[in-house]
Image (cartoon, rainbow, N blue to C red; front, side, top):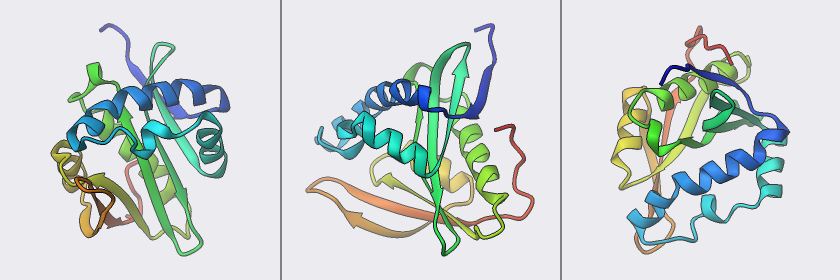
Length: 167
């Protein structure tokens, strides 16, 4: 490829690029469950901007192109929730999702109140579930969202001295 991928905080100017990438990335998920009304495909730009304002987002860039993203927020009970870890289809299976997960974990591990990390994945998305299990997440619950879709909630403790990423 010739260029390296850089990870940085998402800005308001990234919102439109993130939303377009999100729409592209969730097509396979929608097909897997036979449901094109899943929230990542119906989220509006205003909703995404509000989500970024209320939490923390990261983007990965290849040159100027946003090729991956993840978002997270923490609550008063010490739980950091991560959502919408997406990687452009042409860059999957190269470790970029793991790098973004490490970076968002490092961001929230720096907050003294955060004690646990949580994320969710569709029960049939074995590649995402495998990534999360390999990073130490364990299933804690499932929720039926539709006739074919169950979301698996996974958690792990926020480690002291978590991986230090440049995000």
